[in-house]
Image (cartoon, rainbow, N blue to C red):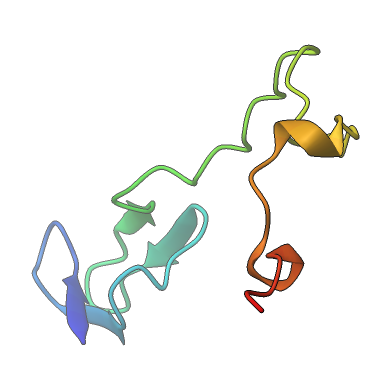
Length: 79
């Protein structure tokens, strides 16, 4: 747990788990009346950028099966 204190009088404002804050929060100190602005210590994760149009791995394009190595189930049995 992390203790968040007032920047002016050091009064305890709240206790929270690390990274529990997801957006900006303003808390008014009940002792001195100072408005304390809190924001996450780490930026929010950005969305992944779109992949280039030539990237076939994400589109599920079908390639020639002879280009791929054989899977274990397709191995010829030794008789």
